Length: 324
Image (tube, rainbow, N blue to C red; front, side, top):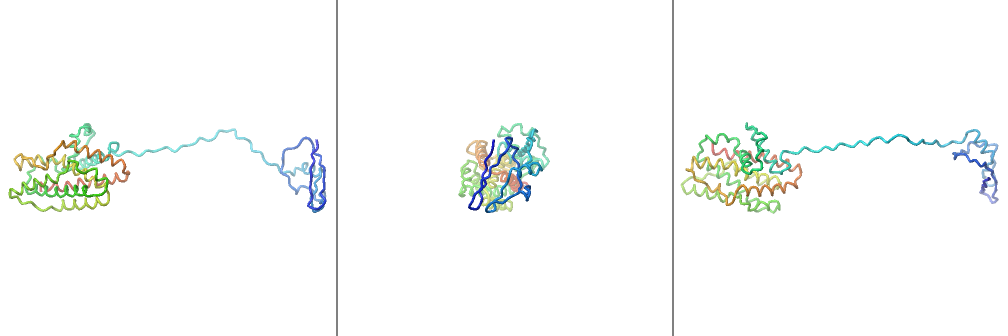
């Protein structure tokens, strides 16, 4: 078998050369012009380089062809893919329930700090609203809890407590009613409002020639703080909102009982009366706040828990007015 090749020169007269190649064609190799002896090359018309069969034979015999190295197929298996292990963040106490449950654990932690041991048995009755109120309620009067059974409240101190508490409730309810923030709209007319009831109680004392004092620094500072907070962050303000009512409903009941027995001959004040079952009213507020809390970031929730601690401290300062 022969292979016909044409080498066309750059001049006007093309040169045709017939090359006879062996049948057995070697593997393709890279050919270098430097392997052709200079004395055996010829130039055609126009400077065309003419190669003869002897040229290829000489180059092949001298081993001047640079062959392309062959890559042997890999017989081993691919290394295993190491997947990065996923790490899940540890949940905060009560996080699976909602932000209000997280705040309740904050109250329990404050209770421990004041020397009252909190154990897992305290969570046995979490499904019971009454037991929850009793546990969390000590946050308002936790520093005075054991003293309430032995202390003798003064009428002057109790009136200061009522005046400061009225200031706090007035501030909270006014902010919620007047704000354009849609988050506050969920907490209007909840049935937990206390301003009107306290006003009636203070008027009752006034009619009996008792001097109604001005708000103390404890109430004024907390009211101012709430107004500033409401402008900055709705989530943080609403945490105070919930804790104020929560603490009053729970710890306030202890105060009301002691004051009624020792100062008012068993009379119940309007401040501690509700038109509906108070546990159900608080439950409705709790569910709404938990619903909103689902849309808060973890950072906002952490800030909220810090505000819960501040709320209990502010309220504790007001409660201490009764026994000072």
